[in-house]
Length: 180
Image (cartoon, rainbow, N blue to C red; front, side, top):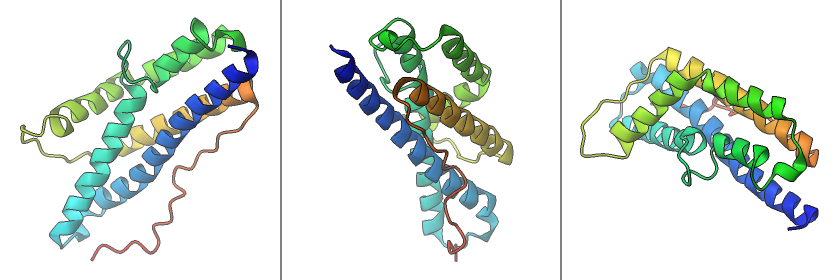
């Protein structure tokens, strides 16, 4: 594959990751808002909506952060492998950048295991009856991971294709979102 086709492949690959991360950011904003304001929820349909925002949030997070060889092709660790030794190695992203990003994500390993646990025990296996009730600390950690993810994608994108990736977390306008 010539370099231009490889860049096109990379751009498409990154677009999928950025789109997933943007969806995560939007679902994060709504999910956090509904969980923090859950005492105001009076009608049962809002509980259903709250649950589904959280469900989509967890499933998308698992896409980006659950690492299995030959699975979840858009997770960050697969991207690091492709940059380090795989198809994107010709871009020569410095190894210290890849290593730093891998270490940054690995430093959140316990939290990422929580995401996987939610996905596996609450959403993937619906035969189990597990309650969903993340604490505020969950959302603080999640916001850190989302911000870190945007930083990683931005740095890699700028290094390879000189394209900036914008962080949209906390940019969802919830001012008119009323939960009566």
